[in-house]
Length: 182
Image (cartoon, rainbow, N blue to C red; front, side, top):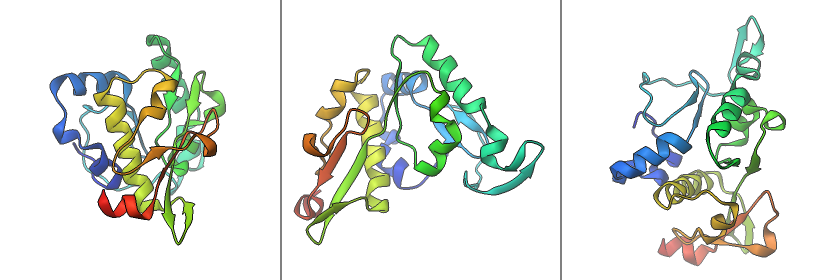
């Protein structure tokens, strides 16, 4: 449990059972600017380094060029080991850009979390980060392996919005009233 922050607060890994950790170790990957692609139980040293950091290296000027195709190749290798080709992307755009999505040989689903503010639904960063953690918790504790099971996610006031969703971006909304109760 080396990572801290809103996403990891929503994940609530400290509540996981042994079986949850086992499933997460097989299915969950964490993108790291320093370490690349991590499994939940990989041992790492605490650090602070954003993926968007400018970092001159032999491959280019930033961490995106440093990681290059290594992240997508590792994801593809992991997908080959699994019966499912489903990739549920819960990373921020900044981090997922490093994975070079066009080179991933799987079905990429990127859920979006919208909160109501002044009568309009939009992505509010703080809440969206926690919601990505809630979704990861749902995927792990319910052993989700299929796209159709994503729409059943309902936590902390978020509910699936079929009318706002596309095949690759399921949208989950939460009203101001639901947020107050959650």
